Length: 444
Image (spheres, rainbow, N blue to C red):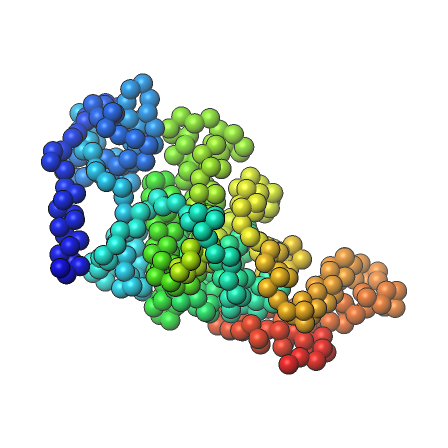
């Protein structure tokens, strides 16, 4: 039997014998309160509210209060009033991705938004709210992955299946760095989630930063800042679901999400609307429960599957890298890349602070020679950083410290090495040979 016919028969069999519905009894801010079907629903379940003007608004159950179900909509509640019908949706929300999704832009519900026609449907459903592979069945992280950015390739080497955070304030270059990684990474597929993005920047990112070459092997999931919080949160789950599909096809996937902070903010709006108590900086407890559930979905797959190398940006408020979300995410991930505003103000991009960044797979993934050269370069950068204020003020005299003299000598070349334009690519081998040439170390 052809796969399309088999899938159609499965969908027909899944159709309910009867439709169950309740009625809207109250609207409280972002929530619609529904009665009559509370025993049919559970947390995370789906309903569709029929508005007075005929629109069908998908909703998710986020809580219960005084014998009523609390629904949060994926769209606007305009036109919804008391007595409107709320139909129960059967089944677990799922998508049917396939390789034809590459090069497409979709929204948080898996619907195309790029004007290129409907999305083809695959044969296997992938749950949107999936669970990560068991820790006992997961493989270990793989070999090094070439990301095309020499500062990361050499000083913060990343392995297949590793999860890294990119921590930065606003306007420090997170999106530009993400576009470089999407274009130049050697991963077979890139899945990019843009959560709470400015509407005008979406086309700029796709056409200018990502480009045709990057888009051709990517799936972009977007939810702009004006969309309801449920859509912004759902975009994160959709990004991971698409990445899991390609991972299960034994592919190496680069999954990038911008940003985890906006996911946490969306979850904060949902939690507070449902009546959760605010805790640290107004974030309810579910935010810190949902973060590991989301981030753990990236990583190596089970035996026979591929991997999801996760790069998650974190927008630190007020450049405070110890704020609650940054602190929680840093404890979950396998390393962090810190972008610093002061470095960007000096005109060096990507504005990575090498000394404050770390990859937890290093030095185990490198050879002894590679570790030695990276260690020597880090030592020079640290020596210069320790005396930077004295050097800028002219208070340091050459000859006072031999190590600092060496750091001053090599600083211009190391700064030039760390600087890389958006249209420039450097692979792993070239990065190490360039660093060896700067330090005058023989290299094969």
